[in-house]
Image 1 (cartoon, one colour):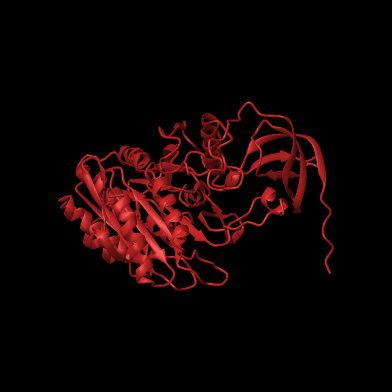
Image 2 (spheres, rainbow, N blue to C red; image 1 turned 90 degrees about the vertical axis):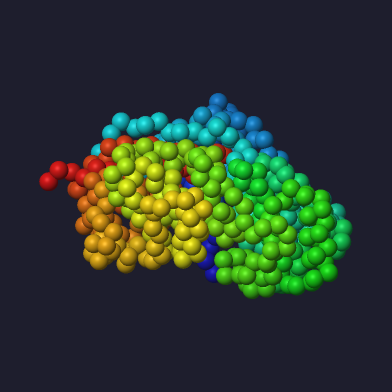
Length: 471
């Protein structure tokens, strides 16, 4: 049997920085880095170590000798237990500083890139209630606090509707009020939970794969339209219709009320048939006069107002005059492609998800945009010589890949195409830096600007403008 490594206590340690994934950083007396989850830079604390690695420790602050001036009072009662908004205890202006620092450090340390003067990070006007989409899970075995466990009291009701506890796939934190989505989000969620308890609708048990109420998704668009999708583990028509009718009557402002019966092992809806109960099967988002049709499976930036700011920066960096052919890599549902189309001769969008491309085509038709074309396929396969010959040499390429960044073959194709300008939008500056390092022999970085899409979290977007070097 392996021996359990002894935990250590380090006293009076100053927290000196914020690092990746929202963790804060301190230094142990032996010089190793300590990664912490419950502190703010500037705190002076005693630390109990947990996991010890060759180059670092993972630890928890167990005593606070001095609180940082960068601290803020968390607004959410669930802050200590919910992992959704880990930076609520840090004042927003300091969140922005550390996000910007992370982007710059990644570009320099990982990419070894020569950066121009940095355009300051764009903060978000709404620090709370900014998400247009939320997903909640039901459970008949909610997560219990330490006080509840130690009380030795019998807990009658363990039903919950909320979020998964970090690292515990089968435990749900019951949420009374979430500060991420505007009203009536909390009212709708609490109504469904209370109706389920009152009328004995069984809450899901992931271990036993049993129950009725499984998950719910709420979309509230910038237009005010509301979509609710409830996922049931099994069909029970009487109970299902009772809930959906009651919800519809209590919240007549719901635009789209849908449901799905999903008895498979995971919660994902993308391979499921979603059924319409009342209203229409979609809602609309709007941006600068453009309308975007959003269904239950559609991808749309989850911060509508800040997405508009991100797209304006992207369009500004592209510097279009109306004469350019633009390729839009990882176009998704074509939002950026359609947003820049009025400033371009034509825009060609490519995305690997066929359903997203269908959404993009429908939205282009809805917006009467004639100079965009959309294609489904793997980026590294689609952009071959035949494709370029058919659609023309691009003057500008916009690329907005997922967190993993671009496949090395896509980067190679970018270099082969040699467009005059590339605008690289990224939700992960580490993989962005890696990709840019492969391109730095051929392109100069002209501009870079971070954009905060998710206040109270460590997540940050970054936009970089590249220009082809003269041969």
